[in-house]
Length: 512
Image (cartoon, rainbow, N blue to C red; front, top):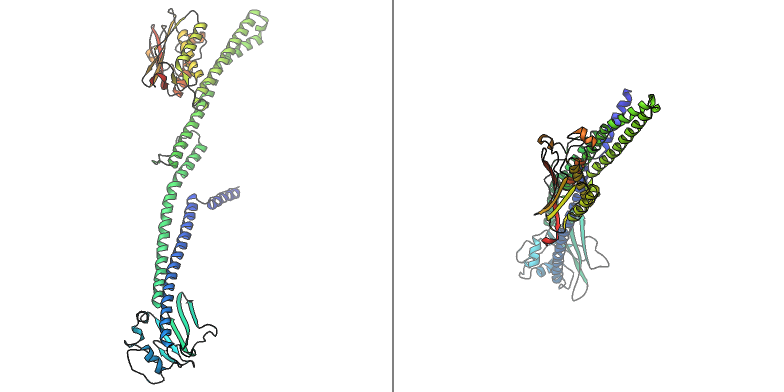
């Protein structure tokens, strides 16, 4: 048994471990997207910078090669120290003798040329060979191994090589005499691009550093943003678990103080929970009220049936009384159940009739006339002198009629000697007021706050005689309040009662 519990606990722990957090997923996705985007952007920028630098260096290297070639092609014979140096130093008659290569650091030479003067200080080496492969001129170190192999088919070759992240550029140029068109020597322009490679290296380091900083910042910002979105969702999930365990739990998502979809979702979520719990409470109250109120008629019917079972069925008088009493209680139960259903529907009008409207004067006239036909011994007066024509309110017309019938029927039930009912309707600014007044027994002040409670009866014995269940006024109040109206009562004992209702005005044609 303990082993099974341990396995279940372990499985639960494993599931929780495998279940990734939404925050982690979102942050990972955002971070990965930003990282990839930033890396691609950085690579693109670096490539553009590198391409620009290489392009500039290629042009400059080509310019150096062209300048040297232009001066060397004027020499008709094979390139030698004796004819190369004067050609490269036109402002001096100095002729250096000897077989060793000449390194020129002199100011009065070819390096006075603008392009060559620029490149002579920028990692560019010039090497000139004669046709036999001997060095006749160099402004830098000469590589070991002799003259490199030149292309047999091409007179001019540019090579751009990259090794260990460093770019190296070389031009291999054959020199032909302008006069004889014979090969007189070879020219190599070697651009090591040390400065440019150092610049590119610095750019790479800066980009890597900035990328790391930017990614860390973006991840932090992503976490804050995602967390601000996920936290309310987590709170809703937590509240849902509480409600799942205890449907009557009153905990709600706190006010997010934000005017966006999440704030709207949290508000709707809380409203949904409020409505759900209200329906549960209504259902619970409905079951409790019905079971409580049906207990008496069921007990009465059961008592009469037991009486008949024992000996009453043999007595015609007892049999008749029991049957009549059972029928009366059955009708009362039927009426009670109908009223309970009406009360339940009254609590859900905002879902079933959200956009219904009614003409107040039309409904009042029809209802008053119907009640006059039913209760011919009563004088029911309707005064609409203060009611504007075509006054419209937002209510299902059958519900407005039901409210009026409840109030008029209640007034008739509790009338005494003076059988007169006054119904009045008036329009006041943005609302309409309706009142139903009787001149009956009235209601004591301490009872007036209770008459709208379910199953409440001022005089239970008399109410039972009149066929009331104590639900009529509760239904009327619930209907009125469901349409954002108000209902109240003013009453004096032995003088009568006046019930007043008011609804917000939807439309009045006379105001247009």
